[in-house]
Amino acid sequence: MKKLLTALLGVCCFFSISFMQGCGKDKVKRTYTYTFYKPVYKTTAEVRANIKSNAPKQVENPGKIYLKDQYIFLNEIDKGIHIINNADPSHPQNIAFIDIPGNMDIAVKDNILYADLYTDLVAIDISNPQQVALKKVIEDIFPNRYWGGGFYADSTKVVASWEKRDTTIVQEMQLGSWGNRDSQAFFMATDASRGAGGFALSANVSKSPYGVGGSMARFTIAEDRLYTVGYSNLDVFNITNAVNPMHTGRKNLGWNIETIYPFMDKLFIGSQTGMFIYSISSNPDNPDPAGQFNHIRSCDPVIADNKYAYVTLRSGTTCQGFTNQLDIVQLNHLFNASLVKVYNLTNPHGLSKDGNLLFICDGQAGLKIYEASDVLNLKLIKQINNLETYDVIALGGIALVVAKDGLYQYDYSSVSDIRFLSKITVSKP
Image 1 (tube, helix red, strand yellow):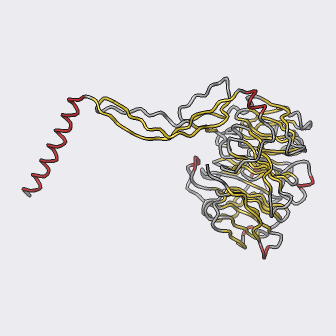
Image 2 (cartoon, helix red, strand yellow):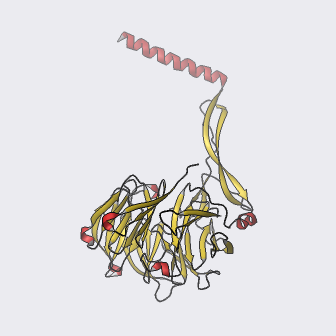
Image 3 (cartoon, helix red, strand yellow):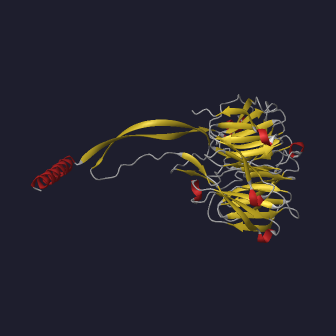
């Protein structure tokens, strides 16, 4: 006991002496190393002049996918769009890159590609994918985009890219005061859950003027309208003249809107708290509420067929939920949509359906393929492991899968022999 008291007394004396020495000097120095991102600015004219078919780039941070005819348009988050010739899914060719700062979303009608450039909408002629041309810009149409990290951009220019820098700082401060660090600057968006658009996922779609997008979409096309969702709004653009989109309407949907999916004359809109159904049959410029299904707070992409909606709920990210499951919702009475079955999953993201096959990207659990002719008794027929999956498009016997480490393609034309075809590997900077 005596030894313990002696030791404690020694410790107290040490801290007392150290404190007094610090008080005598009045100031201390701290050294720390941190990473920040410095914005690289370009003028609006420079940015728009560079929206063209530039040399192909390595895929580093893949986002939304969009399929039109033989081409894959793959979003490089906040940077632009990779153009991939997929005439032979076993050997896809990365042929060009369109530089579009702030881009996250894609949709295509005829030979016109629509994309977001931060708060602007751009229309690009892709008749010749290796010589694309900017045709129209609608400025400041997506107001729900903002900067994070305490960063304020130069409003007279465009942040074209970011330079990563590692810095060591030696800071002198008053003893007992808090040091001030430069905050890490980065772009955030209220609609940052990545999105692209599409029409119905069926083998006939490739013959239509519209392309096919994934279930994580925030852009989608139905008939002669482009529909986009932000954090709280649904925007409508008349694209009867594809090269000249006209903004024709905006509807407030509430909060925490995430995805949009069209089927027949309905729009299925996923939010963090539920699924909203809107009809576009009578007035496509002003969709009418047609139904709703509420669930607990969770991230929420949705797809649909003639009878059911398929909703994946996942934990993590900004959604703050703890549920990981597939909800199957019956649509017989849209205003009274009812939950008929729940399947527990690992961390589901995007999904796609082709006939009676249901494809689910289950995060780190890989890609799961179900026989779904009986929604009350889904049968897992294939699980592809060792992938951290994000979104999938299943069309005409080919499944296109965006994963953390690359863009994969699988042949599912024979369900008993689902085969790997190709991979475009993500190259980390």
